[in-house]
Image (cartoon, rainbow, N blue to C red; front, side, top):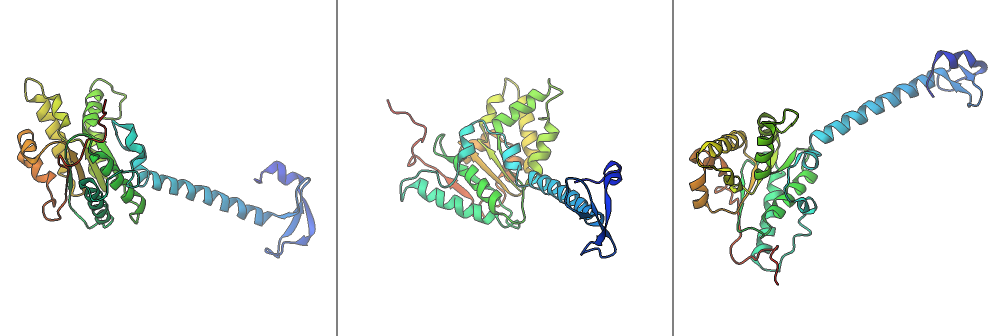
Length: 271
């Protein structure tokens, strides 16, 4: 119940006093229990403060815990449901070993002082993106205090940034995207190398993409990268400065999760 002048005109002071504010008379109002004006004012302030704190908490959670769900860019929406629990493996297989290693590395990322990238490499369809999303979700859920995690499909991100050139209403500008990817605590760059398909007869598109990737990786020390390419193939596509930033801490911390021909394409259809 809020207090206003119309209500105050209709209240009637009673001879009894408030048990809390012993110098204040209780008042009567039709269709309401007898109450103390000071208590009512205090309740209103408490509700207001509670509403403010709820808003602050929701904003805090959105800016940290909620970044993964709200700002991630995926080109495969099935990945939204990916977890460690539903990553299917055959016991003692390469995929099972890689699942164990992914969980172990995710545990390292719970420590904010862990400064190293992770490379997940292998042929399409072996579950690299599934593992990367699972790692992000585990960190996002358990890191204390909250920290922002983000999944970005490199190919889709480049497409959105290019689209912003001719769409002034798009939020996916180069500045917005590089700032978003540069500031999160843990980032997945998914399917690195696929954006090389943008390359035209000149080096213009490739140089532009590499400039964006350099700007992102140069700011970061905690990035999970998935790619279908080998290190030799990556060397043919990217500038050495990008590669050196991509490989930060990888060798030192054994941060490579590698799939070979021993793991089948999980999306393969037999007919």
